[in-house]
Image 1 (cartoon, rainbow over the protein chains, first blue to last red):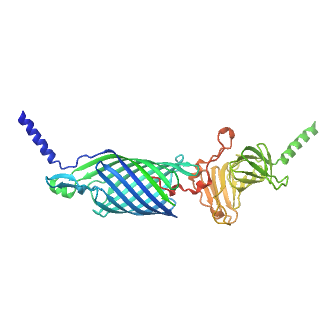
Image 2 (cartoon, each protein chain N blue to C red; image 1 turned 45 degrees about the horizontal axis):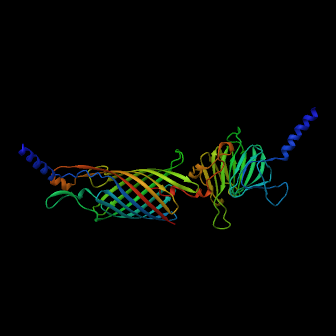
Image 3 (tube, each protein chain N blue to C red; image 1 turned 90 degrees about the horizontal axis):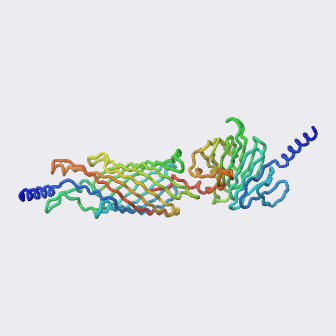
Length: 251
Length: 231
């Protein structure tokens, strides 16, 4: 009996030691914060955004973005942006670490990655709904120069604006975003994000907001993993975020 | 007996002619009239029930509100800091000039066909609005920063159809219910389209049906909801 028990323990430890597929790290609900400082001149918007996201406990995603947006028509804006991000995780970050050889996620908190993207933002008033509603269909094409990954992000959304006596007072938004990888990954949709939030238009300069996000990310095996293990995996990470946004528009 | 009847009819006719104009049916705050009849050069305060005549200029001061009932059957709600001149109150041919500020106009419904002549005309310094429908709102825009630049005109229709004509260029635009236009500095009339800021306008002119005060500022017309970020 004791022999069987010891054999079981040994077998279990061998299985754990050979655990080569990422474990589910779905973190429950984690905090996030966004600071936006925008300057508007005519139809041009200059923007600086900082996002601080704790996606998994112990891993922090920091994003610094500089961009310009131009309003070509009343209902169409387009822009370009450059973003430096830390703490990004990719499929290739699941590696076989040395001493003892063990499959682990690389710590990327201090690794800088450069992104450049273009965004197209058509939006319209949704007249058939009571009150003031705006429908938006944002499309972003983004390149990560760290690993040459190209991604299309599609983000339709609906915003309800509660108008005060002299302009918007509150707004509530619901957005759904998908990441479509163009030259990497084994999944058609890599990430999905659902955003629900509100912004208080305290003044034309300052708008604080709160948001809740539910996300789902897929991690899949790389060619290097397949070469080593001869198999594929897809791992899904799900989580929620609760965040605060501070938005400043400098006249 | 017959003579008495004729005299009675004549009395009604002449009494109507004497007051041909309208009546102030609601007032809040300071409402004043510059009466054409008295030839006074000073505005006089008036109260609910005051008779108005053709040529009278009615104005509201800060925080005031007035509802005029014109003899032709139409009603006009004058917002704070606004003024109108009553030009004509014949039935099916009413005409009012908006001197400043903004007003809601509720035209008596009739069986006029779509192609009939407008039965109510609201004029401003730059455009004339001929009304075939029932209710609309018109306002001067915010004060231009440069002198000698005409104010914008904003207009939106709640019910019916309004034909807007640029006095100078003769450009004509028909505005349907739910749509609005802007006449930029008195020049070109914009294409009619739904305007978000008009959704909260208070069209009520009946004291018994709740609040009469319109809380939407014309400044809001310049706050384009599509131009802001909301996430």
